[in-house]
Length: 240
Image (cartoon, rainbow, N blue to C red; front, side, top):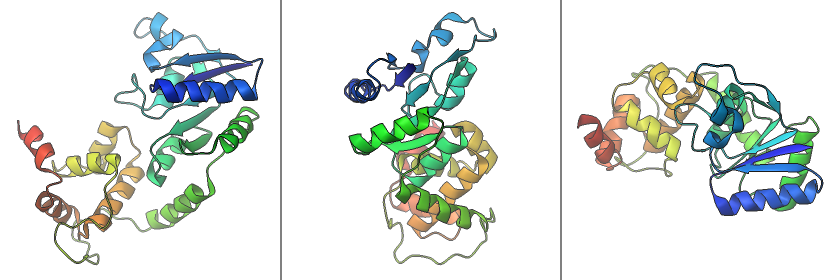
């Protein structure tokens, strides 16, 4: 059995390797800290087709060096790496889970997952199954219902939260990235292309940003973000 563990944090990579070796003592386990370390990525010239190399299980961090401008699952496939993918990530939000699953991973596992549950989930994926924590699955169901009535109209009148520039809850890193691009006037398609996201995922991020800021539309969200000091640095960089 061949298993690949890919995580750029050495301590967590070692912990993942330990969990994998305990579950499969006789497995051949390879560990990398960057997708640039993939054998196919290292050896195949630009533009040449990568030879297929199959693992029985790939345990993958979602934010990996070497995946800039794309997503790590796509990088694996382009490099000729095949096999079921279990994403283990520190990004614990349903939008990241949606992004992970849409990109073809078989499992989404937050890094806070207990070791015993992690081992069971990895074994399930290796045997052809899939896994998403119950709480995340419920959030995804809610998001699916929400996406049915998402629109892009800037003039849509949604309820406004009390207070100007006051967040109901902190923005995630991905929401901050989307907000910064909203401030430049980018369309959903442009944001998706720049951040390697599906357009529907951009819409969901935007809706969550509007709700957190208590904004009526994108223009109002940018105004409130500026008042809250959330965009000062991003706008300065964009104008320089």
